[in-house]
Length: 496
Ligand SMILES: Cc1cc2nc3c(=O)[nH]c(=O)nc-3n(C[C@H](O)[C@H](O)[C@H](O)COP(=O)(O)OP(=O)(O)OC[C@H]3O[C@@H](n4cnc5c(N)ncnc54)[C@H](O)[C@@H]3O)c2cc1C
Image (cartoon, rainbow, N blue to C red; front, side, top):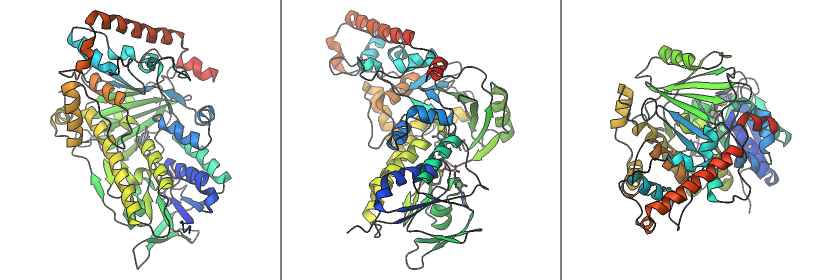
């Protein structure tokens, strides 16, 4: 018999709250489940979160939304990846694309051939073999071919968008389909005496809201999962020193780039995210190594166009909620944990949480095994992102400030050290279960930080150097030809 939970209450109307509401109303509408969102327009939402990874397109695609419609509604631009400036060393940069590098030959990944060639004095850059990187470097964009003529043509893309407009779009979608909205402030959370489950929410003006499943999207406050249920938080500050951010919006100073810029600073890094109508800028830093005033000044000194908002500050502790699902409460978004936006992963982690809620949607028993499975998967998703982000810091050879020297010399989680050893010895790239990033992403970060494996796959020895050089020249030419034919990013935006 179907004894599914019938009454869902979502607390919070930021990006997490409205993404959850839209997805659940789309996929649970026929199950006779009621969905209520409680948000407080007095409190507002965090108001940042403008860079995404390609999974966002699958998310809104599942809701029936088209790329062009989302882009128009959110003033979005195309994102081919991230340029990391000065991370490895000052005056050095590398690119992390959502794209492949080169073409496998004889079933052996391209980078093994490239490693061999490098060991024989070849000086060409890996990026020249990636259409995604070369489009970005030339300020160009085009949609990937529907039937790629070769793996060389494979690349993916994401969006830079106005987070507030995205949440608004999802809110309208949800309300049109029957989600109930209560705009009020939650003043108290009542627990059931017998089992400590959440029973009701007390509101400032509108009385009491009851529910069976509560989804905590209340942001950093974590009103339910922590405030009421005292679930606990795993702190990752030993590896991720940044605990503050300051953000400001500015007028666009030039045509929008088709990528995010992440520029290392003395105690952290700055972002620049181009939208159609303005830029988003921010500085993420360690409060142990830099004052708030200094961090704000560095941000303002580097903003290209005139600022159009007051600088807004954020405090956070990197880490994750020990259990994303506790009793009848599931945390989604900032209430479930936070990893700095270096690789734009927060919204992607929200998508994964929502997909798991659909997959493991509870019945009235709140089965312990279902909850355990949900929590195990969430833990792995968070830890794999954590490792990827940590590596960006660990790999630096800047040596110029205490912050960067600490990052270079710090111990790292064994899960990351293991991955690194596999690459450093023979160039093996491994994707762990529940990892968001694909192997080329790791390759981009390793090679971007000048990590050269000492060996390579022995299969590549079946080809001579001259033969490989010829193949490489053809691959580079094929990428360069495709780039030459593509319009600029601005032209493409105008066209669509
Ligand atoms: C500096 C910074 C930069 C970021 N950049 C990126 C990025 O580039 N890419 C990315 O993917 N992610 C990024 N993120 C993360 C991203 O912003 C969040 O994951 C996303 O916005 C989701 O936030 P949220 O909905 O969980 O919380 P919020 O936006 O804070 O929403 C919380 C909601 O809860 C409501 N609420 C809170 N308390 C109460 C109460 N008592 N009663 C009623 N309602 C209440 C609020 O009104 C609000 O509606 C960034 C985060 C920060 C801090």
